[in-house]
Length: 60
Image 1 (cartoon, helix red, strand yellow):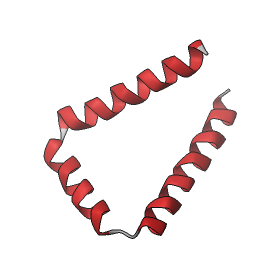
Image 2 (cartoon, helix red, strand yellow):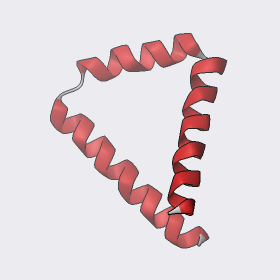
Image 3 (tube, helix red, strand yellow):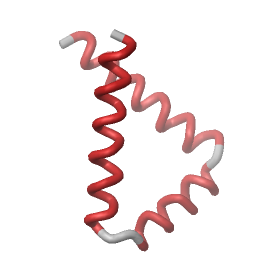
Image 4 (cartoon, helix red, strand yellow):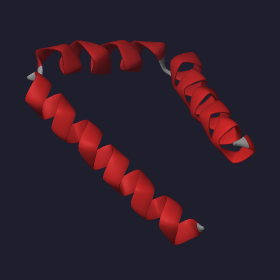
């Protein structure tokens, strides 16, 4: 449970860094994401989950 909490905290740190370092780029990315269909967003999300799990397994 401790490792899961640490991982979620790191996600927040990375997201915060993106917002802090490049807010205009983040806004542009969100505007572009709004134009995508829910199916496309779901596929991107599934791809991110799969890549994340593979990398986690590889590094662990």
